[in-house]
Structures are given as C-alpha cells and as structure tokens.
Length: 492
RNA sequence: GCAGUUGUAGCUCAGUUGGUUAGAGCGCCUGACUGUGGAUCAGGAGGUCGGUGGUUCGAAUCCACCCAACUGUACCA
Image (cartoon, rainbow, N blue to C red):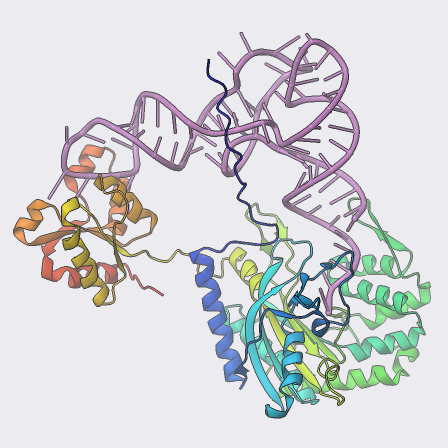
C-alpha cells in the first residue's frame, strides 16, 4: 500500500499587497502617457534631471525612523555605517537635496522635470499603490506668483494632452496663507488642534459640509460605526471656518478673517495667480480658486494646487470609485533652505501617473488594446529550421517584428495557438510542397479569426483554409507588409 | 491602527438542519479529425474547504483565536 505521496512544500508565489506586476498593455499606456507629459513640460522650458530612488532618511523629512517602527509610512533600512536610508516617497524632497548640493553650478531659477517611481508604506486602495509613478516639474529660485500660475496652467495643459477634455478636470488653487489667516482669526494656538481643523477642511469634497461640521465640532461616526474625534470648536468658530472654505465667496467676509494680515497676503497672491492665468486664456472652468484645498500638512508655504478629475469613475463591477486628486503641488520655500543658510523659494507640480492611469483606464480613455505580436515563422519540418530562421532574418532585416517558433513543433496547431496568444498578425508556413515550388504560405490570423466565427465544423474549416495565401519566397517581406498594412499593424 | 464584510480548483461560484470518496461552468493539459489553431467529441490534471485549536461518533458547515482580502474610517511627509 502506497503512502500518500507527500507533496514537496511549494513556495507560494505571491506579490506583496499594494504592488502590481505590469503587462505589455499597461507598460505601453504608461510610456505613451509619460511621453505626452514630457512634451508639455519640455514646451514650458523645463529640462530633465534624475535622482536615485534611495536617499538618506533625514534628507527626505525631518523625522528619523522610530527604532521600533522604522518603516512607518516610508520604507527604510540601515546602511553599513548604520546611517538610515529610505526609498523616496516623493520626487520633491530629493530634488531639493539635489539643488542644494549642486546649487552653485545650476542656473537660477532652476527649472527641471523628472519621472520616477516613489514608494509609500501605507494602506493601498483603488488607484493607490505602494509603488507608483510620479512626474514632477519644479521651478527653484523664483518667488514670483507667475511661477505658481505657470504650474497651474501647465497642469491644465497636461491633462488635455492626456486626452482629458476641458470641463472634465479642474485645477483647484488655494494658499496656505489663507488658511493661516483662518487660524489667526480663530486664535488657535495649539498645533494639534489646528492640524485637526486642517484635516477636517481637507475632507470637504469627500464628506461634505455636514461631515466637516461634525469633524470641526465633537466628531463623526463613519458608516461602519467607527468614531473620529473632532477638533472641538465652538459653534461660532465652526461657522467661521465653513464660511472661509465656502466655494461662493460673494457673501461679506467675517471681520476676523478680513483683519488677518497673513490671510490678506494669501488672498492677494491668489488674485495674482488668477489674473496671470486669465490673461493667458485660462478661465475658472480650468483653474479655480478653492479655499478648501489643503494638500498634505508639511512643507507647503504658499499657493497649493490640486488637479481633480470631474468624471464619474466606475470599477469593473459598476461601483463608483473615488480617485481623489490625480496631481498637485505648491510652493515650498523652506525645503531647499533646510540644506542651506539662505532662503531658496521654490514651486512645483506633480502628476500621479499611476493613479491617473488607473482612472483613465476605468474611464476607457486609454488605449488598452494589446500590442500586436511578431510574425511567427512556423516549423513544419524540424530538419529545416535553418530555412525558417532565414525567413525570420529576412523579415527582421526589413524591420518587421518576427520570430521563429521556439516551442515543441510537433504539430501545427500548437504553433498557431502560440501565434494567437501573442496576438500575431500572421504566420509563415512552408511544408515540402511549398518548398518544391519555392513558395510559402502566409496565414492572416486577424482575417482568419473573423472567418472562423462563421464556420461551424472543423472539416469545413480545414478545407477552406480561410485568409491564407501563398507567395514566392522572395516576396515574403512585401506580402507580409501588405497584411500588416491591411490591419494597420504598428509596433512600438 | 479602528470598524464592518468576506475567505471552497487558476477564475466565477454551488455545497441543503453537521452525515460516505467536496461539485459545476470557464480555463488548462492530453488525444481523435494523422499538411493547418479557434468548432465538436473523449479523457486528464488540479482542492491542507484561509490557518490553528476546540465541540462532536462524525465539521467546508457550529465555537474561539489567528491570518489574509475587500469596503469604510484614521494617518498620508
């Protein structure tokens, strides 16, 4: 009696959560998106620069990793000399380091762009990954609101270059100084309480006025019954905050807000950005002041902007999906000066390429058709591989993507199946009959697939051999080209 | 992190009040039609029923704990 065959313990092949493998279609889409964004950034005068994915942890932010939880939010590890290193979580902090390190040799203002993967160790969601691509542009060394206005205009241009039409996106602009004015008016001294207020404001688009009102006051209970403690503001203060972040600013401003000097400064800057944008033909349908935009909590010092898609996105099951902002940025006057004794004003804009791609894919705005595979030269007679390889080379030399079938050539069926899976436009066949006549068969798989739908029996199928024709060996390249042209096959 | 929901084949799911060797469709592999894939037919592989412990004569099914995924929420430089 045989024992139960004990299976060897197999290693489970699995991808850590929040990460994704990317196939040809996704890679192609990313490549096209990146190229379109690059063209816009180049047109605005930015030049490329690239920095590594790893930086000293303290160069990225002011916090060293906690000894107990060194990977809170960011992926960190220690170098040989015990210094903490981290994977970058955005492209702005590394750029600040780069500019500070090469300050004397760079032209000022220094205007550059770069695309790359960034990493965040946090909970993933739809369109939210732990590794994702950003595409940034920054102007370092200019304090002018014109530099900020330009970022907003470029954001709008980029969206349109990516195929998001006017009216389907909006660049929302606010100014941290305006928010500081609100703080002044409220007289909030405690940092913790102010952070709670800002977080509440940031949630306006998601939770609505009533949700924000709850978060500014006692707190809010979510759908699952979980409770979030609020900022504990009084009713009159809540009213002041809500009036300050309201879209419609036509009502007379609360005296406390009006009297804040820093708040007024912020409003003046916003007004300038608005004027610059308007002068260049960007109306409020594209670039709009929105006093509820907060943008993170750390390094922004002045204008902040956020690009939002206005289209309803639904997932495969038809459920609505929230993507949040697909891009954003702002002024970070303090980031470079951390490395230097002097003030270095800077402003930048970042597109979340991965998130935007996820959104555009769901919206059907991206070309997700798979790339065409190569022309496959089949192996009819095993001992004539050299001949077949010669056909392959002839095609390749004429810049036609081609390959020899390298699997087990025991029958034709497997070879056609392979070609089908590769999405090949056609295959080349040469048996002894064709060989004797100095000919090959070219089988048009795209045309054949259409014909197959109408044919019921295998016998009929084989007798008619649809979409297949023969030609002289010397004509292979020309005839293949005809097939490619008929189906508009283009590679790369 | 907190809360809710859900874990059965590669995928989508059945699985009756706890009762023999856990099923289907699709996919995959093999074969038939022996110079041509998608049709059809025949066969096959594939499951620690998320994991561990418990209750029971008996657990995919009941209980406890753990793990994972999804959704919401918090955090997000």
